[in-house]
Amino acid sequence: MNEVPRHLTETILTRVRRDLDPSPLTVLLKTGVAIVLGGIASLFVCGQYGLGITGFAQNINLSFHHHTGSLACAVICGSLFAIIPVLVLRFMCSAIQFRVIIRKKWQAPVIWLASFGGMLAYHGEFGNEFVNFLAWTTAAYFIYLILGLLMDQIQFSFHRFVHHN
Image 1 (tube, helix red, strand yellow):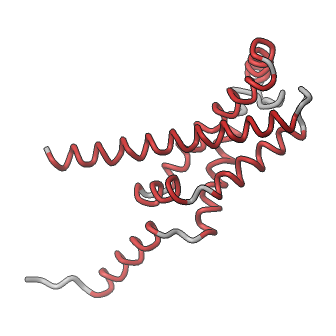
Image 2 (cartoon, helix red, strand yellow):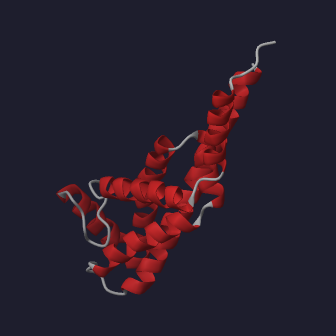
């Protein structure tokens, strides 16, 4: 039987350790990049607190606000905001590292989403911003978490299906 070279074993073990227990800096950077890039991308589609990058985004935001009120608009917009960052994070991480970040490292996305939401609320134009900020941040985090958990479950279910058939 051939023995695996020691350097290869060490490389694999290092990668597995890094994926199973990413450093706080790695988690903070990866979630930060995902939320900033994904958040900016979402501002092309749906404005947040009256701030949109395109006229279309502005109109969507104003329409939601006009038809649902500021609190419901904050929940809808926070939910929409969180979708793209989860997709970006998935592409930035291995499957295992994504699972660990989504399931166990909740602090980093909460910090980033609250920071981004706070900046948007600060520049908001609809009044009652603190309540809207809490609603926006809560909705954004739970959609981020739910979508992340669904993506994680689907990828591992697909992997099991492929390898058992």
